[in-house]
Image (cartoon, rainbow, N blue to C red):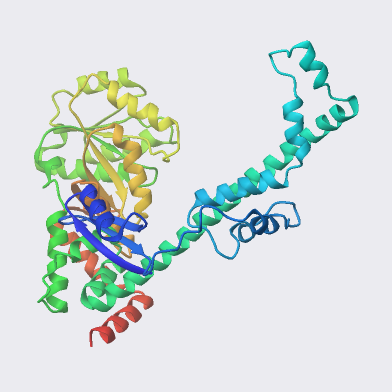
Length: 460
């Protein structure tokens, strides 16, 4: 089996190229989007498979099908035989032939003898009358025939599962061969991809970024280039919360630090514009002492604090704070599967204040798939940006960077501690990527060092 790659601007053009050069029997192993369009990996045999003759000798085919297994169902090898089959269709035809051959002849006879809607003429009826003994025997055969059909269906399902399993194994093996070939042909690029993945960056983003690295660059130059490219793709909000006025709501799962983050922002805003220009509101009526915690921060800062239980109360509170320059809304933290989350989102949507800006608060030390799922849950609301918390607890930042870039989510702030209001920083793309590289270097895993040695040896 040989493997070839095809590049085209569209998937339709790439498939036409595969069909034109390799024929309709080619197997599509993988496809993905690249910078200039799409890439398809196809596999084909060196020599065409010889198709079996359409007509075959029944005396040869029947014995192989009459060898039942322990449970009465022929296995895949028994159905295929020594010569094999080219497609699932031929396997199903052979299976159907086997079922027809092994079924007793009385089954067919009983079907012919079954009464129909049209009654025969008297003369014909007398000529084709079936004795009672044979009629009883025909009815007794019917359950056996239906059982044989059920066994045939199970055998077909078993064949389909085996074929799917074989296809998955083949795709895995071909993918491994392609990756090994790429590593041998482009050792530096493979090494850079591994470094980004060890830094926490997802494989799709890592491969895409590395593909833009100049081929003439050495290892250090290429590494600095892709870090700069990551920083260019990472968007930030440029401190728009503390420089603008309005109503801001902070959403996110439980335990992400929403209340503490709000207190930090309120304290910094009060220092700049005065405590009378900022107000705090909570719609968290589920967590114990949620209002008391926010009220304590408000007392320390010197700003007003209110609570609301529904959309109407929230509208009334926001009307009371209409003269405030900045109003920060604290929400309840729910898990992604909690049904109360929908009710809370409806509260924000149904309020009369239509200018509420939503910000997601995410833990930077959370798994990438968890953050992506969280964003999908909250996609009901128009999110302006996000705040990554608990930076001081991270061993890598690549997951957060991947989510922000792939979801096109601007980053507003970073928090790295519990101190109010000190432990909060304005998001800067270069700083975030640089910090991610430092964490990678500091907490480099043992397997990463081994990969580095292997790639260096290949490059030499």
